[in-house]
Amino acid sequence: MIQFNEISLDTFLKDYWQKQPLVIRNALPGFQSPITAEELAGLSLEDEVESRLVIQQSPNDYQLRKGPFDEQTYANLPDQDWTLLIQGMDRLIPEVTALLEEFDFLPRWRIDDIMVSYAVTGGNVGPHYDHYDVFLLQAAGKRRWHLTSQDCTETNAIQGVDLRLMQSFNIEDSFDFEAGDILYIPPKWGHHGIALDDDCMTYSIGYRSYRGQELWDSFGDHLSETNGFQALYQDPLWQPNLNPGEITDAAVTQAQQLLESALADPKQLKTWFGRFATQLDPTSAQQLPEPLTEAETPKLSEFCEALPTATQFEKDPVCRFGYTQLDQNLLLYINGAIWDKQGATDDFVKTLCNQSVLAPSDWQNPDNYALLFDLWKLQYWILAEPS
Image (cartoon, rainbow, N blue to C red; front, top):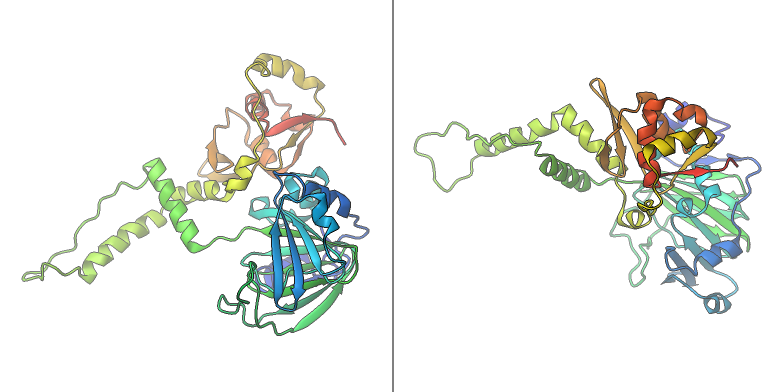
């Protein structure tokens, strides 16, 4: 886990998380980036990698380019004031994926992805705010961060650029960061990071944000898919001599009470939210592994016979696992679906969700073999050699 040093984890969760920024010095002592700037640029040449270049041309003039790029792109870049950003690095580089274990003091299903940026001197993506929480780990070089709590509104925007940048940015605090330092930023706090050298690399561990409309739509979809809300609307007591064209307050109240009855059903809410929390965005869904073909898939009995020789399984980094306790039953969620546990023990289901690596001691109970076989066929968990 990252080291908070001057405060406790409890204090961070109570006083800072989603409330105010926090500078965490030497949060990961001795941290060295598992990927170089050259390797990052190499990834940006690939079609399936989401990459961007941001070039500052004047104080309020930023150019956004979207990859994939080619070698000539980099040959033509200026000597300073540009930044390369690569999304979803936790799905591409296992060593970056492993970094997520340092943040397991928060639910893993809350994480969106890890974005890695490289910048030359002066490189930045402009003053902006986000709608999500983010830990900004300085991985190499130095960066100066400016912060503000003021004017973080949609109307405060620079016009004519392809980025959502703040026109007014009144600096309240400034900090210089070196490798191993982390800046935590809650939603709707303005921040502006500027590279101080040509070695500046920053890892952004971003968390999902949920708008109320998104939750409402998703819950409605869940009720529709599960036929879980079939109660009928019932009229209020109509009064004599009513106006036939009037939709009365009493009628609206009846509709409101019917909708609230769905929200008051804890079983329905729990069942839905597990699906919602583990669903994949469209980009991630396209990155799911290819399942084994019929020719590649042995029988379950053959798989079980081979298990004693297996040393470990690793979870595919794209997949989202979660579980919830519903009455006396433990529900398993994978990638937005309620999953058949196939007789697996509750402890094994929890291990699948809490860990990225399985050791033989985790699956030794034969009751767990069928579920593990199912997930291996899909390549959600793969056989791997220990590191």
